[in-house]
Image (cartoon, rainbow, N blue to C red; front, side, top):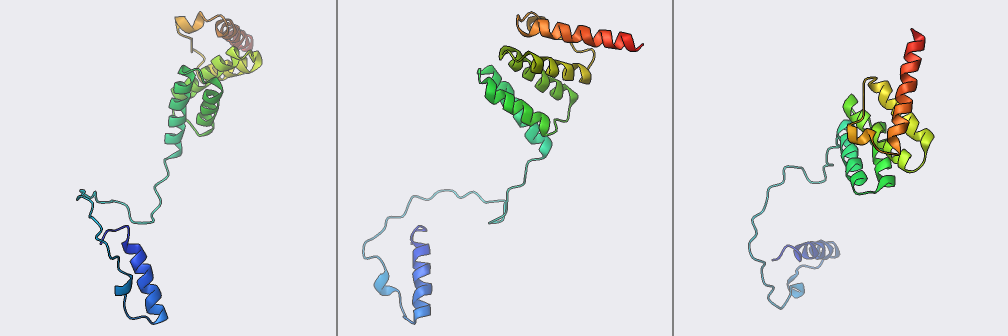
Length: 163
C-alpha cells in the first residue's frame, strides 16, 4: 500500500476499532494504485521530532558578517548595515572580523552622508587596532577617505597629548 494512503487507513482502522466495527475491507480502494519507482532511502541520523542543534553564536555572527559583505558588494547597503550590526551584536570572535564590520559600516554611513556615524565607526576601528590603515584604493575614496584621515589624525593628536 502506498505510504501516502497508509496514514488514512491507520486512522480509519483506529476509528473502526473504537466504534466496534470489525473490518476495513469495505473501505479499501477498488482501483489499483501504482507504486512509485523504488527510491533509495537515506538513513536519518536524527531522531524523529528532535530539534536541530543551534548554531554557535559565534558561527551566526560570522555568517552575518559574510552576508553583510555580500549585500554590500551587491549595493544593498541598508541590509548590509543590518548584517554588520547583527554580526557585531552577535559576538564576532576575531578582532579582524570586528574591524571589518566596523569599516564596512563606516563606508555605508559615509555614502549615506551620515558623517558622525561614519566617524564613530572609524573610531571603533582605531580603538580595536590603532595601527589600522585603509588600503590605497579605500583611502582614495572621496567620501570616506578624508573622514578616515581626520579620525586618524585626531587619534594621533589625542595620544600625543596624553604623553
